[in-house]
Length: 397
Ligand code: PMP
Ligand code: GLU
Image (cartoon, rainbow, N blue to C red; front, side, top):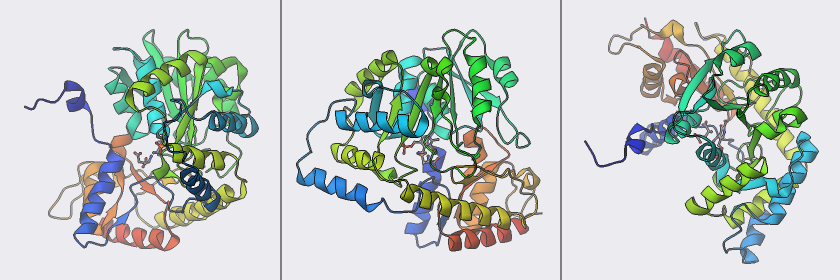
């Protein structure tokens, strides 16, 4: 036993960060590990953004900012949401946080009471479930299927809602499946939600710029549901700014006030230098983000093409984000003589040790027969990793 709180003892380590840590440890021992476990663009932050941060330092913008962010940044985000997403959030309805991760945690802690149910269409992003548990809510999965492109239907959603359901959390484009809900699909889900009093949705749109077909639609752009939606976004993925740690929400005033209250006690305003960088990102031309998107698309097609030659790996065709989420049930129960593969986690450990490729188990995303491969890396790295994975899997009988 230890003296830690039940809360922290119940909390699982982030599986994505844990795999990255393991691959860093192996690398430090001299092993040539390919890390396809973490979801972060391999591009450098664009120069105009870096220049804005350097100027912020030179201008001594180094004191505390207001808790919800600088007024100029909140205004720039409000403009961006209107311009790109057809969303009407006034600057005072924006809260800037230390990453979308903190933004989501603020909302979950602000809204979820002990025993409230929170619906997580699966596969879901790893941290949602742990945030819900931290808030003493009851996570409830709404399973999707590869055949249905990992999207839930309005009927499935309706069937999962009880009088205890408080919140639904989903991402589109989805981490880890890359699935993208169309406008019609979102509207249909919204029509279910609006029938239930006191039911809210966190729409995590952090991958909005990395979308390969059609256009990204924001759930809150449908007026009838807007007051029930908390829109989450950030600069990590679209602008290659993971380390700068800036995310934000647009939300109804009462939720905004609650998030400011929590953030004011836990962390205060996000880094002032990063806020100035994020402001430049909001006002930047679209070409740089689109160029990154085009490269991700080429990599996606390369990876999907190469995976076809590996027996038993079936996937959907991800329409966004930078992950492929193959089913690996074919390998369960197989062995290399020394180790039997009982789960997707076993398979990931096997591939880390045997192929020196770090991936993430689908268990962390609520789908135990899948693994997640990030293709936010060079084409050569994709080729090399698939060769390694294929060779290691071929040893399993
Ligand atoms: N939501 C999703 C779906 C993500 O994949 C990530 C990646 N970290 C986040 C939120 C959090 O992003 P960040 O804290 O870097 O803004
Ligand atoms: N969101 C990324 C991922 O899923 C970054 C890691 C994390 O924040 O969990 O890999």
